[in-house]
Length: 164
Image 1: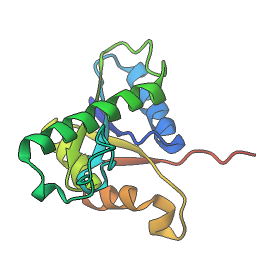
Image 2: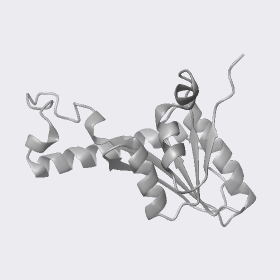
Image 3: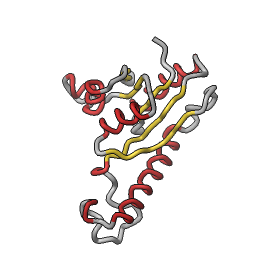
């Protein structure tokens, strides 16, 4: 099976960096492969202080916030996430034969955000990191497990090798 449109969900963890290295290796083999490196912001987990440190209403649920203000908060969170992703990625993607899409998106859940992005952009493979937290579900990490169970495309789970 040949892949041409690869999604790498990126949360800036060591496992996500390892997954990105694997996806880069695939993309280096074929210049037609398009990589999508995407950070998902789970709306209810947005940082409480996005430039509003003095705002007494910063912990008010988004539904009670002015829609324009909320939109600004989301845009600020996405911009900050993309900037942080760029810092975490560094020059890892330099030298790839085709351009890479690096962006942040918001979603009601991380799993849905990954699956929706893959579907909407025609991704045919998801390469993602895993976190070791316990037995099967924990071993994969709850997001990895959720994507593995619900994705419509193949999912490659990349667990970073343990440090000696």
